[in-house]
Image (cartoon, rainbow, N blue to C red):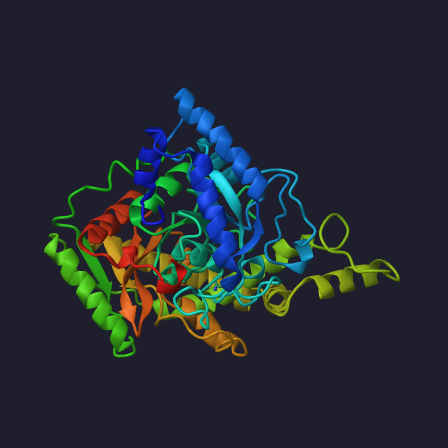
Amino acid sequence: MIDKSVRELSEDLHARRISSEELTRHFLSRIERLDPRLNSFITVCEERALAEAREADIRLAEGRAGPLTGIPYAHKDIFCTEGVKTSCASRMLDNFVAPYDATVTEKLKQAGAVMLGKTNMDEFAMGSSNETSFYGPVRNPWDTERVPGGSSGGSAAAVAARLTPLATGTDTGGSIRQPAALTGITGIKPTYGRVSRWGMIAFASSLDQGGAMAPSAEDAAFLLGAMAGFDPRDSTSVDRPVDDYLARLEDDIAGLKIGLPKEYFTEDLDAGMAKVLEEALAVLRGLGAEVREISLPHAHLAVPAYYVVAPAECSSNLSRYDGVRFGYRCENPRDLEDMYKRSRGEGFGAEVKRRIMIGTYALSAGYYDAYYLKAQQVRRLIADDFRQAFEEVDVILGPTTPGPAFRLGEKLDDPVTMYLSDIYTIAVNLAGLPGLSAPAGFIDGLPVGMQLVGNYFEEARLLNVAHRYQQETDWHRRRPPEFD
Ligand code: GLN
């Protein structure tokens, strides 16, 4: 059952060869048996999932079902879920039960998908290794001494170990694509504005975007199709019809123009990674794609610009956690100021505090122009680089990460090295473009991914190219051997 695609599972459900309840029980029992080794879930919603499954079975029996009806999924614990703890992996929200559903949660409910539980993540989505979670690190199923990537590391590990067929993620600087790459699954971050941020706990509002994580591009297309769409409650949501991602999967890619940024393919590129990408390009050429060099001259400025913009926005977004209205409150405060200080001091972890301090500094009078404004200007240059590139090519291909998964603890004491894990993904968020990571091979037994970047609202094309590639390769079918 765990090797079946979402399409196959959906066909089985519609043909009543299997019930959603059976399917849900199967994945719940895998979570119970295998997740103690991964720590990929913060909350498992057994009873609720079974109730949703029974409801889905009724819809299936009555012919009121859609493609995702009865299919289980795991939800990153950053999306509000009515009646279910929504912690963002922070002590600050450890006691928070959301009083409402995020738009994405609502949409998945309407589609009839079955929520198995809420997945572990870096605290407030700040991190690249899932080690900043209040609930402890997530482990990579390919080697449990290694990180799964972050911040959507719980979702990635859960999908990779097939504890769930699908999972949601969010990506502010790479948090869907990087963990997807490091766990050997497919992850897509759509264009900024394609998936509603309403009810998705904010980190850096101009960069945050929800997306889909799954073994294959086809599976991801099922999930993204249900998540995407205009939402009047999110002022940055874009009012434009959602493409039929599934209908476009099989499109011919003969004549597709693939751009390789010369800034990525230098001698600094890991030799193993270079070989993996070369092989991937050979497959795509075999399908008729044409490859040419392009340039993203400001690529090297993406990480520094991001580490001004993202902390600046987070320092503002996280000011709402003050111990007054919801979330953690310190015990026996002496006075109001003591309550603010200790609630925030005790409720937030070290990485979150570091970001708040950097952001507050960058936004303070006298430094605003030098840092924040400058970073916004750089952001524009980065977006312009992409704009020019897309005049020549249809998609841009590169590595998703500098290399395979690193060891737990390896980068924890060195934030700058940690920040460089996202060197290939961050520019895409700064420009607001869609990006996808697909499994493309292994280095020393560990999975790595290739990243495809498309022009605005070209999600369908990214899924199409990845799907055609996956019809020729089987990287996305490989599973970590110890998680049968
Ligand atoms: N690793 C990056 C950070 O820590 C990106 C995180 C994300 O995309 N949420 O900011």
